[in-house]
Length: 185
Image 1 (cartoon, rainbow, N blue to C red):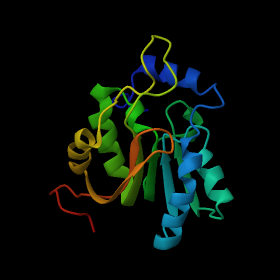
Image 2: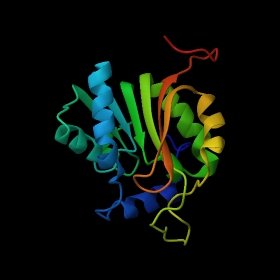
Image 3: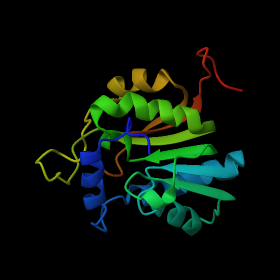
Image 4: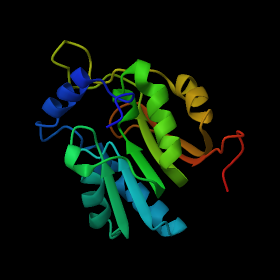
């Protein structure tokens, strides 16, 4: 596992949080939007970055979409293996949980595995859950104006929409940039 994206201490914290059945359920709310996107684009492979208990897969099946290939990744679930490249990379309710000093590594990793499209949701306010050390579970609580320059370093934003499914947040559809800073083909 790439230790640049998560510290050992925080990995243990995430494993503990995932013992709560109500932790990691945001992807169920976003699955109908992702399902529509899959139907519109015909993507065949999905990488679920920060998959947790694979609720996105459950939600997609409930929405009538069964991905051809589904690749879950979550450092708290080692049996999923490493992040895998896919036509569509979903990162739902994950980025706000990243340790701030490791966000750049996570965005770089996301850009490397995103072949065609990314679907990312970001909650911008506090979480209901508190970490064992007293910090809010959303380690990054910043507005979209803070997120956009960080995201556009690696991605072209194709669509951005605010959402209030779980408080104040945004969801975006992106395309990866190539190394020269232009859109990848």
